[in-house]
Amino acid sequence: MSDDPETARQIEELAADDRPLLVLDVDDVVLEFIRPFPDYLKSRGFGLTLASFRLTGNIAETATGRLIEQPEVTALLGDFFDAQADWQSITEGAAEALATLGGHAEIVMLTAMPHKHRAVRRAHLDALGLNYPLLTTEMAKGPAIAKLRGAKGRPVAFVDDQPSNLVSARNSVSDANLFHLMADNSLRAFLPPTPEDIISVEDWREAAPKIARALGL
Image (cartoon, rainbow, N blue to C red):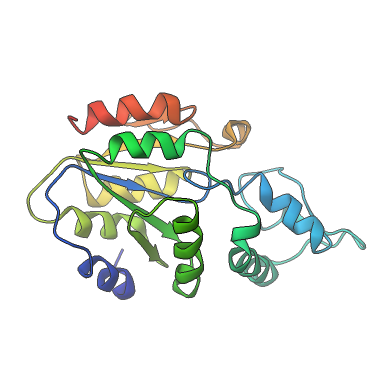
């Protein structure tokens, strides 16, 4: 999978850092998504039924019961991200865990979202006191993590709620320490078992010491 050139540009703006690297997904890892999103949809006249681990096919117009197609889902998500400051709060335990880990590791947030939403998300994270660098990508996350790591081979940990992103990281950084964390653990029922080399954690309280150990902190 090729690089996203805009993500590469964002990475080049970062200050050089040779500490162990912790890369974090944002939605449902650092910020709540799957809990506030149904409330947002309701405010727009839609309902979410979680019958599988995907949005398309699970969102219906309340008035008609019509399931909406991918373009409408994408548009609603875009509107939600524009309004995220009104809806998305910090995942329980994340701020404390990152404050502890950030003393000895470089923390970078890597979110899969259209680049045009980066400024809004940056402002929201800053308002919440999460002033770690933020990268957006519209392509696979693995190449971005490899580029972030640099040539020195420092320890890497990556936390995401989407198994496909963790697999992408494994394909690009074979020795990365991978952690599967979901803000809503009830959604695990929709996923196949996690591959053996990915560590499933219930919450940030469980994740923090395991990440610290993996990064040798």
